[in-house]
Length: 115
Length: 113
Picture: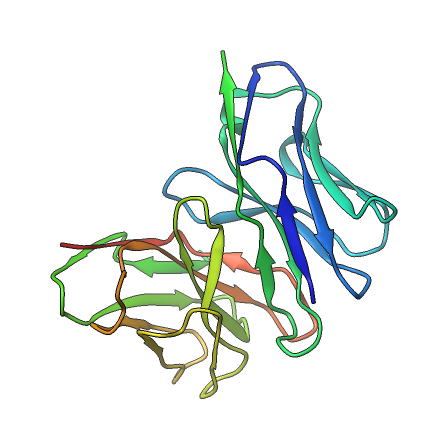
């Protein structure tokens, strides 16, 4: 079975400082992993996805994530936070097996950016 | 302008009433999904459909029903049997069985008065 755990429900940073949002996963298969972002009262937008091509994945808006198999982690980072990055972020793993193609979502990390 | 549309954006209903949420996509995607989002709980899968005229229950299907008569449409009915229907509902679609990225609509916020 697959699962994801987002280690922080809320992260607060100052504008211009680095962002780190942590995610651990569990998967019996070589996983497909995603990060999605959701601004208030909006739908989800794909930031980036990992599908075994390269361990460092670059996404939109300057975000990137590194797949570390030994640590079962897929943490999201950004060198310098911008006010517009304030949103909720979801780490997601694809299901293999019975519900092929379905996704399992973490509980989300709310990112606050202080001026 | 391609994409996924959900209507209405805000919906209010009285207890005991059924209500139907609309989801339409013009992306020619095969699969469609309904999720429920509650604060601090992430997204939970209600129903999904891989092809027209077929759909499957997700993790929290009780009190909900769906239909998939057309490829582009996947309406969700919240019935009076759903005990706690107030939530944010998100519809998503995926291009084909061998792809994995889902694309989301803007959501409908349902409030039961």
